Image 1: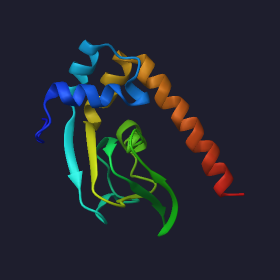
Image 2: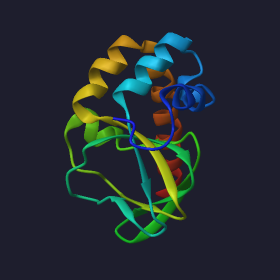
Image 3: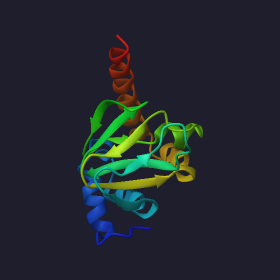
Image 4: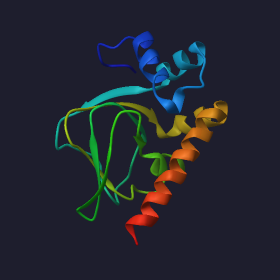
Length: 144
């Protein structure tokens, strides 16, 4: 599934440097590297489209992306951030557009594999939940 020049070991090393995966052992990181796809997106490319189907859980390995809702920018995502979790977990369409601000390199866990991965790695699920709580807090501020 890893279609870049990156080896599984290099991908595991990259993932281990991200807070989401910081608690995983080397063997667990290697197993993650086997279920992810890697993809690069050009600057300006829309990765997810608001209201249309999403297909995976994206983790930013390098680059930057913008979060846009109804054309208005609400924030930026960078290395270690993730998106697509709502669509992947709930099957709902994305609630925002995600647009590459500059070349973006992502690891993608396909939607069907995400639940099984999370159940098998509760520490990652907990870190994801913490991040979701921070996003909710920020979204609440946007509406103020």
